[in-house]
Amino acid sequence: MTTIFTKIINGEIPADKVFENDRILAFKDINPVAPVHLLNIPKKEITELQSVAKEDLGLVAEMIEVAQNLAKEFDVENGYRLIANNGPLSGQEVLHLHFHLIGGKQLGSLG
Ligand code: AMP
Image 1 (cartoon, rainbow, N blue to C red):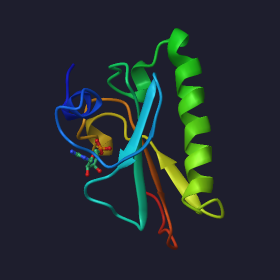
Image 2 (image 1 turned 30 degrees about the horizontal axis):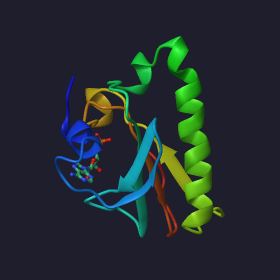
Image 3 (image 1 turned 90 degrees about the vertical axis):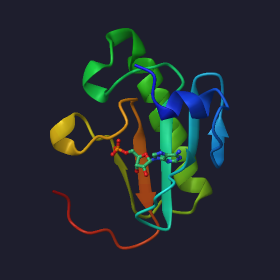
């Protein structure tokens, strides 16, 4: 399913990009909930974490490695969250797999 994130990948709408390679793109969330709020997405159209196929688990591992590097770059190594909302009850709005990388302040409880 094509979403607004595909338009960002294709350069059809702008984004504040912080990392890009052939497989992964990361950019600043347009509506940040913390001083650091990045979105880390695969360029491949995958709807959600729950539908990641076995052959794409390496891609998800690479997304986590990118998140580790971004946490260093944005100086939040001492406390951040990597969150993937999954499905309607989680509040997932964009149906393209993404990790929120959130940090830069004392974070509240989950749930
Ligand atoms: P989720 O609720 O997990 O699907 O999160 C989607 C996120 O995408 C939200 O935090 C939005 O603020 C963010 N978002 C939506 N459109 C854009 C955009 N054009 N550029 C950057 N972030 C966006």
